[in-house]
Length: 361
Ligand SMILES: Nc1ncnc2c1ncn2[C@@H]1O[C@H](COP(=O)(O)OP(=O)(O)OP(=O)(O)O)[C@@H](O)[C@H]1O
Image 1 (cartoon, rainbow, N blue to C red):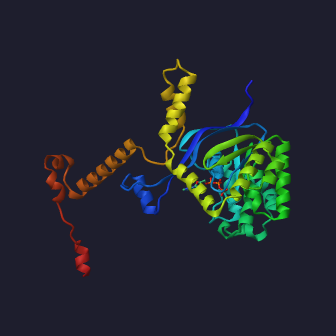
Image 2 (image 1 turned 60 degrees about the vertical axis):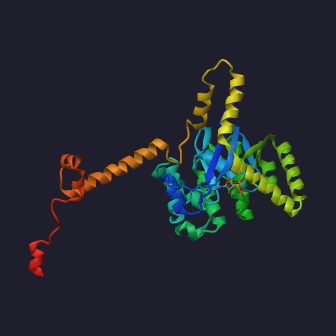
Image 3 (image 1 turned 90 degrees about the vertical axis):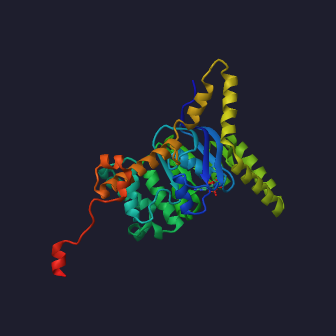
């Protein structure tokens, strides 16, 4: 029998458009941008599963895609391609993740708990525990934008562990707290582990990863470089960082430049073809492989860009609305305008000042 999993992601990619300005972004949304906007692929086809009750560590250098992956798993951001199957409620703890800067700590507690599906009486019952675990004193009544990163982490951690999720995603939340809080968090995480909850633990601290994780996935410049037993993967990652540190400054820059260039040049169509070919080999009698692959890649994806039919529809609606407004203002009937379109610029009556106003004058 296949082992039960809590999280399964397949062929996940994430593309970002590197807009320079907000207006470039807006133009692109309405497909008005003629300039080619540079793209960057933060993830280039990651597939992995997290078994029920295990703690999976995510490691990798800065910018390798760990947070992107954990945010996709938590449903905070959509993937560009691929499927995400999460069985249960997730709660993400990242520094300030999901906290609204303009709301106070208390308001954020209520908002996040409501979003997690708790009712107001349930939140009232939990409030004292959340407040006492966070231990941020009077800052609870201040807007979160005035918090230090340590305070945000305290509040975020406290909310996330008290809403009783099935899956806990901890993204670098332990790196900013002081020692007392760190120990409190470790105890809480160990409680979760003892309860056989599933945890995804993102960290740069290999010691913490070794201490806590059953398996580790090494994310390397947008790809899943290695996944397996903690000792083995952390050991190989240490060898890589040692090799990297041994390079000269120029060699380091060249290496990073090459990796980032590969992420800019990633070809999603070639990726789709690769999967199709591999699946065609495995299922030679299936005539629907190409359409199955397309469905698996794009079927569950909410696009952040407007599709061509949507763009056409939006423009058509906009033009119709403007046309009917113009007909209305002209004072002619629609039939008259259709018979003689020029009348749209020949209004039936002009604006005049009411008599009462003239009398006042
Ligand atoms: N909104 C965005 N727009 C453009 N690029 C982005 C965006 N968010 C992330 N990226 C890029 O995606 C890549 C992966 O970022 P991500 O935060 O997932 O990395 P990470 O492994 O979590 O890094 P770190 O260890 O520094 O937290 C980075 O190169 C980052 O610059």
